[in-house]
Image (cartoon, rainbow, N blue to C red; front, side, top):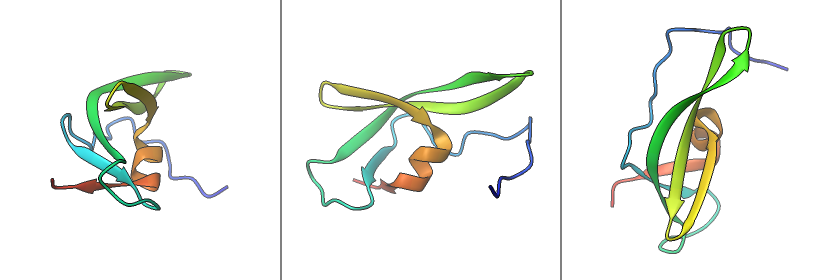
Length: 76
């Protein structure tokens, strides 16, 4: 697997309140809003950057990397 080297100083590139949609579907019924940024401990002092996203009453938690790989940020 081709993974980047661990960087303990990396930052969130996602911001709270930003809006996202899946790459493979059309709006408007697929708009998610980032409601929280948090760190998930992976062990050995390593932390995974994660987000909470919400669409209506649905809420999901995922890593920032997965969000960036499966969704795109929208301005509206």
